[in-house]
Image 1 (cartoon, rainbow, N blue to C red):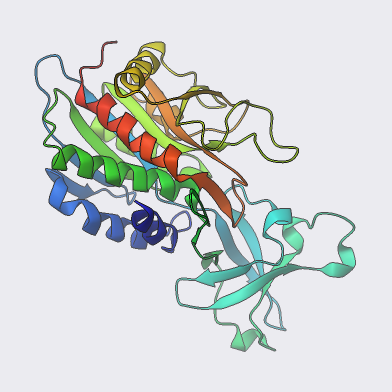
Image 2 (image 1 turned 180 degrees about the vertical axis):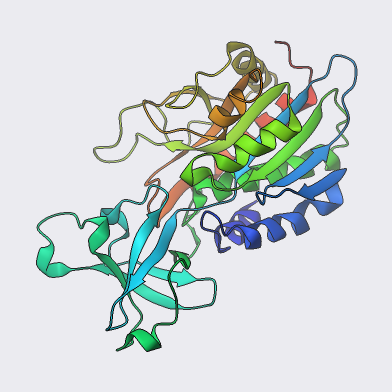
Length: 334
């Protein structure tokens, strides 16, 4: 499981440039799925099983994209100024190293003479160690992610892009579990690895319209409260996977949440009920598709979300795989 996580987190894949992540996932899951295709938005849509009596068409979505920066202009000295891709906090990324698809690397810094606190986004630039605009190795519109290694701390791991490559990895491991355990349940399951979640849930919106599911489940991270002066909430690392009650994009369907609670009881897994005052996940886009889809989100508590160094607990991850596998294997009553 850690190897899957490490491989996916280290892929290059800011919003709108998820192709390397998609092809890596395609290679991982191709032997285990019944159908595999890519749509015009770049979503990877896979099917496992067929709907039987009493079954549902279930869409499980995890987004491939990560936060990053996009070059907005380059000055005469070769410094590339940037716009944010997704919810990037300049305070947490200031001084970070970034990398581009063409291999170019640089340091994200700010106009220091203007700094009296947290840098503003329009003051951020990338230094490539060059001296002229002609020598700058990137151009307007090129995107970069943050360059951070995967670190194994034993029971916990730290990396860039755990939001939401941890969700992608959880989906990959669930697909493997369904096939390796030869689970042939009543549900037709569409695993969607979606694009552009960080900039507006765009991939999930279009793929949900195409899949037309009876039930929707997103897999994502949520804010862990167990850090110094952390966000308000009850979600902690090591407390088990989280089941969303609400966030800024969704009020979860009570029957879907009840099915998750029942699944957790059957496999004796602790769960945390999640209330988030803001933000959103692919579940919000799925729920609002066509005439509406009963939806929820399976979350992993994560420290330092939307920073270049996010942290999750591997027991939560493993239990998430077990919980989602059990949920999908049985009839879901609405």
